[in-house]
Amino acid sequence: MIERYSRKEMAQHWTMQAKYQAWLDVEIAAVKAWNRLGLIPDEDAKKIIDNAGFSIERIDEIEAVTRHDLIAFTTSVSETLGEESRWFHYGMTSSDTVDSAVALQMKASLEIIIADVKMMMESIKKRAQEHKMTLMVGRSHGIHGEPITFGLVLAVWYDEMARHLENLEQTMDVIAVGQISGAMGNFAHAPIELEEYAMEELGLKSAPASNQVIQRDRYARLATALALLASTIEKFAVQVRHWQRTEVYECEEFFAKGQKGSSAMPHKRNPILTENITGLARMIRAYAMPAMENVALWHERDISHSSTERFWLPDAFVTSDFMLHRMNNVIANLTVMPENMMKNLNLTGGLVFSQRVLLELPKAGVSREDAYKVVQRNAMKVWEEIQQGKSTTNEKGESLYLQYLLSDEELRDALSEEQIRECFSFEYYTKNVDRIFSRVFK
Image 1 (tube, rainbow, N blue to C red):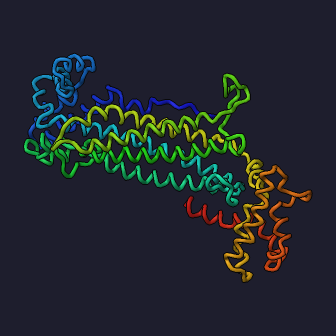
Image 2 (tube, rainbow, N blue to C red):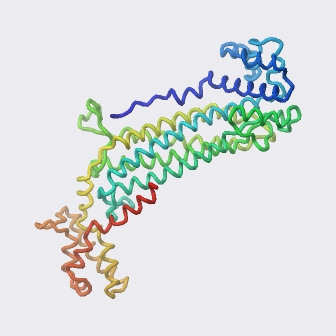
Image 3 (cartoon, rainbow, N blue to C red):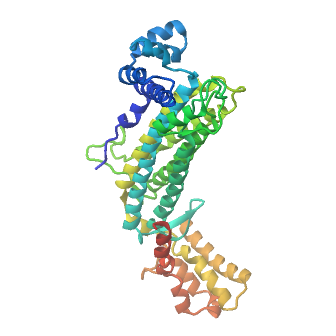
């Protein structure tokens, strides 16, 4: 059954309410730190912690006059306090609040993405184990190569996702960083201990050195990590789309009862989910560009980054979350057709075994060049038969390529019939699957 995805869990971290709450969390952490350092009296600190609040409507009203969102916020909060409001935002600059708060939002959001990746890895692992020995043809340049298993394809996917998981976990360490270092990052108006205490309260690390902002290479690292992840998900989606092509038809997205594929052609069963994923991946990659361009701010700070981050941060997280859930559902519910995989594997009349024959000839004393010639010339005969639409098997069900090889006198001088027939064994190509799986699924 296809699971319905809800954006609420991710989106709730990027609402205006969540934004200002994160700002307030940072400001309260600073109040607690100042209290710990002895500046703010216990009574005043308690009043601020207990009573500080904000109204989005009131912030909007004030900002319409001040044209400064942080000042509008601090004014709104101060209206919920008494004389103790003099300590609110004490010794801080706007970016101390904003950037530390965004770190909280990014951290919470990235935790969801990491959970999504783990979820998808489990789905891939389950299907890989299910189809560990399901034979199919491997393709290079879109052309049939040699026998593989569907499980091996999924093992490659799992291994790639494991690298993304590691990258995202490392990225978490890069982005979960805040600051309360003052207007130019020189700690002139607040001791370093203030920042350390406040970041400890928030569950963030202190930036070892900052100016007026958290450096945007950290954000760019996040954007590129999500872009790389999206590219891999698109890779999976494109492969599913190819498998679902009518001429291939080895796998298919789950097609629900009552689902429709075309307003004009009732027979259609289209890979709409994976096509959607391909489009979403393009958007997520696009967000990496402004994130990287935001790294180069003027001197200690400007706000050219701010406008782009209001777009790309929530959109990249929400879209990545949605895309991961969609791809997970595709994998978990994918209709796999082993019979069609085997049919396609046999489509070229045994040509997929050509390298096996090629590698047996040098063992029999034939040069590499001569071996290639004899193996290729018989393969070309099969291609000619395929081009003419002829059958690639005889009445006994033997492949056309095997028939040509057994009739080649030069080849028979080097290899016996038994040796040639042995080259057409599928088991030869699956003998190391277990060992590969043991390396991937440790």
